[in-house]
Structures are given as C-alpha cells and as structure tokens.
Figure 1 (cartoon, rainbow, N blue to C red):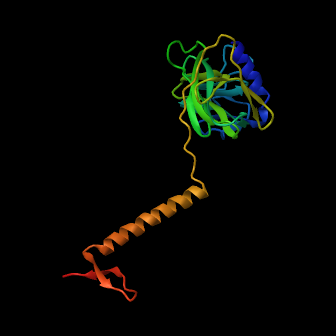
Figure 2: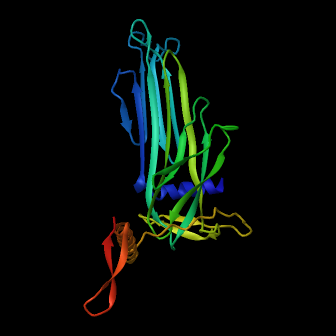
Figure 3: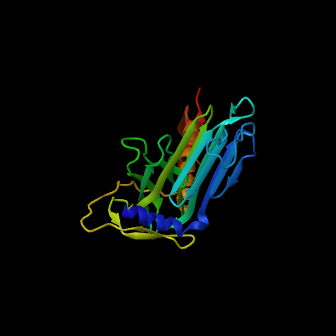
Length: 288
C-alpha cells in the first residue's frame, strides 16, 4: 500500500502529461456530454414528473448517469428509467478514461530490462475496468478479475529498454457501463504504477533513476537483502559500418570475378606456343 501511495504522488507531479476524459449519454434525449473530470445527467420522465417536495409522489425516473475520474480512481454509474407516456426505457451509458505519457531516459549504456509493477482493484460490483502500461508502443495489461477482484492485486511486467536513449512510456485506464430496460449498472477501478525496477544485460540489479521530460524521477531502488534478478539479454547485433560494407562488397566482387573466369575457361586447354622472346607461354585455344 505504501508503494501505491508513492506512485500516486508521482503521477500527480506529472499532470502535464495526464489526459482524462469522461462521457455521459442518455439515449439521444440530450447530446452526449464530455468533460475532463466528471459528468452527470439526470431527469424525471416528463409525462410522470411527480410533485416536487412530496416524497409520496416522486415521479418516474427518466435516467441517471454519472462518471468521474480522479487521481488513481475512476467510476461510472447508470440507471435506465422510463420516458414518455408509455414509459419507454431509456438506454444510458457512461465511460471514463485516463492516459499518462512521458519520455524518460535512464542513465548508462547498453540494453536493460525495466520491470514495472502495476496495482489495481475493482471498486464496483458489476464491472471493473482495464489498466495497462506501455513502453515504446508495447503494452502489458494488469490482472484484475482473477481471485477476489476487490483485493488490491500486484503484477510485474518486463520491458526491454536501451539505457541512455529516451523511451516513451506511460499507462492507460478505462471503465464503462451501460443500461437499458430499467437496469442499474456500475463500474469502477482503483489503479496505480506501484514501482519501477531496472536490471542490466546479465540480470543484475540497477539502482538508477530515470528522468522524464518534465523532470519527473523514475527511481529503481532495491532494498538490502533483495535478491531479485532480471532476465539475461542477448547483445544487439551492431549495424555494419562503411568499412565493413566496403570489405564485404570487395569480397563479393572477387568471388564473382573468379566464378566468371572459371566459367569462361571451361572446355579450354592451355597449349605451349613459341613466343617472340623464345620462351613458351600458355595460350588458350578451343578444342573440338
């Protein structure tokens, strides 16, 4: 839990790269509304409005829609009521999303493994949501619905990175709910990046700190006695330089020239013929 709170503070310090969106809609009765933090739609059926202030005549609910997204938490709740004289059920929907991105550079050189620990917990009875992390376009999703979904669950996810080279990393979260025919539905999750740990090419621990584009710190710190190791990575094959390409091209030309020479001499024999200087030399002559 301590790691979860620390990660929430980290996310709060990099709000410039955090985008949140919520949308509420009610069956076309009103245009869908979209806001960055929260939205709400509510109305009674105009054909059965009830009597204001009389708890015994509350009227018939038309719809109720709410969605919110905050620091490490998002929820949606929808209630489908009736509309018009026939009290036709109103289809309602709500969704919430958040996406965080940053460009981070970890010091050093060579390949490394960045292990990201995700924490997630379901907060609604009906539906949870999705939470995942990505590095340079490669994503990994957190585990949510296995076991007790209301229990805070941690999962580790490994990404290959190159030290000294900026990488694009971030996370995304999403939840939504919809209802019709007088249904009630709710969704929600709590989520966080609980920690970062880096490992070298041989799986050794790296106590290093990455720096984001806004100065945010991504610390990889191992506690004393922690014997965790990472995967052993194969070294990257370097791209050939101009000198290597020149040597390869020369070797290929030599092999091709020798092959054509042999092909041209096939079916010929060397015959000694007198030369003007008195020495015999080999001269090619075709034989039948």
